[in-house]
Length: 272
Image (cartoon, rainbow, N blue to C red; front, side, top):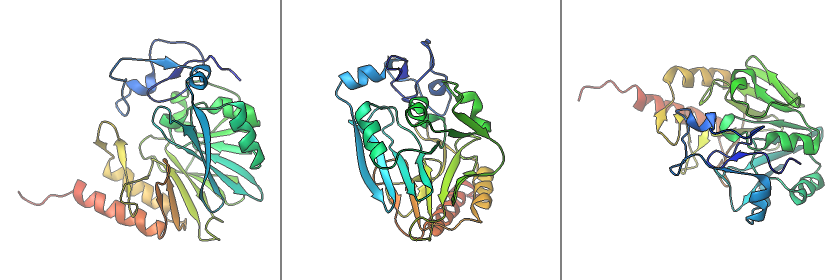
């Protein structure tokens, strides 16, 4: 494990070598920390008291995070299936104990990540489990640590396991992708979205943003295109990117209602 590679403290992405800047944070969708660009390492995070956190998030889905949280604070999701396990999204933290815990759950056969803000220590996880990392080719430029484990795919959909399909929605980033699990929820389907469709505090809805911290809304045409790409998929639950951020029922309806509400406000042309 490469314990000393630099990790941006703000976004939590690990880089291949020291550098003065973090391009992911300098992009308008993110931000450089108010104290300036700061770095850490896996070794420093461990020494500071961070540990892995593993807890069930839903039927067949286990959440994996850090305690206390690092950077953005997201958690990943391990989808456990008879055909193999997929780790959806990524965190910064990793240690031997966390590897052992995940191995005890069946390990990781494939990794897929929604967008660059969640790339975390993806190469470390890929090496720990000898697993490929699926990223949409439209986000190739944002990969901070190139590696042979990364599979760049193109097009609108990519099946990465039996009943496990990546869908490129293009929300938030051009390569922004979600993971559909056909057999989740006893065959009613589950959708794992990170913050491509982010589950909001009122967990009956999701949100769509180009930038969350800088409050830049996503473009209506992108939302409409994403809805078209999601039409073939049925799903009961929607799993967002943070602990407990789950739409528990009528996931398809929740995404549609959320988009309709968003577009109504975004395109309101009534006279003042």
